[in-house]
Length: 266
Image (cartoon, rainbow, N blue to C red; front, side, top):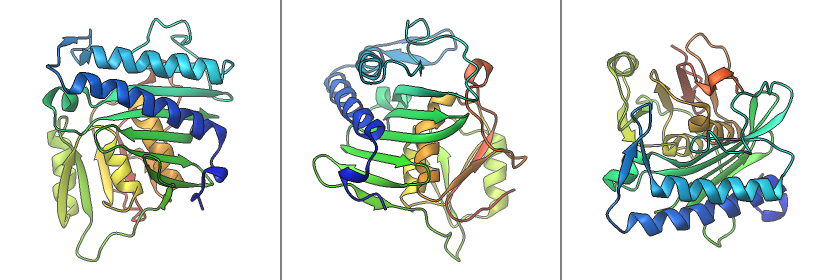
C-alpha cells in the first residue's frame, strides 16, 4: 500500500517535484490575462504550456538522462526523437498543461501529466492539479495515492459501481454524439463533466466509475492517468477489449473506455 514516501519510487518522487514546480509556474500565468495561439492542429497553446514544458523536460533530462522524453509541447526538442519504436524500452510521456482550454476559460480543471512507459505499457504516473494543489501518483503493481502539498500521501483505490447505476465521466470540451449515445445506453445514475486528465483521478480515487472516450486523444494525454488508474485497481481498454499500447507511430490513441472496479464493457 502506497502510504509513505519511503515506499515511493525515485521516478515518482522526482517527477512529482517537477510537476509541482511546473504547476507553480503555470499559476503565475493563471492570475493574469491569458494569451494563446493556435497550433497546426488548431488546439490552443499558451506561454504557460511552454514554460511548464521547459521545467519538466529539463528536469527529467537532468534526473534521468538516458530515458527519452516525448512531450506534447516539445516536438522539436533535442530530448525527444519524433518517432521511437519503444515496445521494449522505457520512455516518458509528458503533457505539461493538459486541458489548455480549461486553463484559458479559468475553470480550474487542468493538470500537469508525467507518465513513464515500460514495454509499451503504463508504469508510473504523476498527475498534478495546480489549483487544488493535489498530486495523484501511482505505480502499476504497487499502488496509487493522492498527495496534498506537504502532507503524507494517502492511498486511493477504485470502487465498485453503486447498485443505482454507474457514475459516468465525460469530457467537458470534447464530448461527441457517439460518446453521448454510449453513455445514454448505459443508463448511468449521474454524469460528471470534467476537463483534462482530472477524469482519471476521479476514477482512481473512487469518485466515478466509467470514462468513455470516443474522440481523438494523444498518448501524453492518457499515459499518467492510465498508470494511476491501473495502480489503483482500474482498467483501460479499447472498445474491442484490446489494451491501449504506447509508443505508436504518431502517438495517436484509438478510442477507449476507462473503468474503476466495474469492468463494464460495451
